[in-house]
Length: 148
Image (cartoon, rainbow, N blue to C red; front, side, top):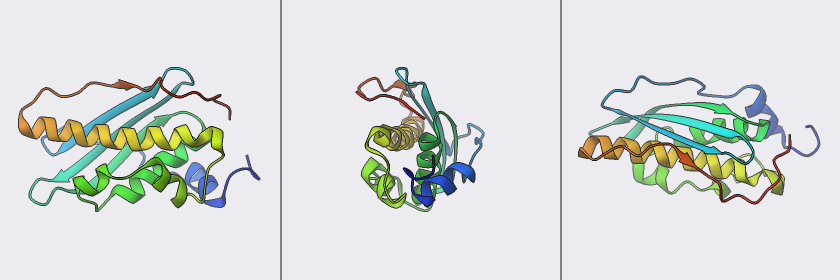
């Protein structure tokens, strides 16, 4: 793994931040995304201050390669303290840049992490507005080879 990955990627893989889950209460949104082609599955939890719409706490559970774990960890680091609108603008490019880059074949992992964050925010907003909560999303639009 060393050599093709930056030190930041390796650090977030070896020492992931914000791993875990949050209880599903009125201030929590849960987003689940997965790619059935390669098996990466991500679950993000956001606890939001309803007055300010700032993400107060964030957790994730990821089943996937080292890049998937590292991008999930970095996404949580970037999103905590952001407003929901700011976090919805977080892109895979933002995540990859903060990690000092990813190999091209691994860019889909950062896309999944951003998608899981966005799904958690959508879930929170649906719950707060009394709308049906969206379910898990399959991300099958990636044309990549999933390798370690």
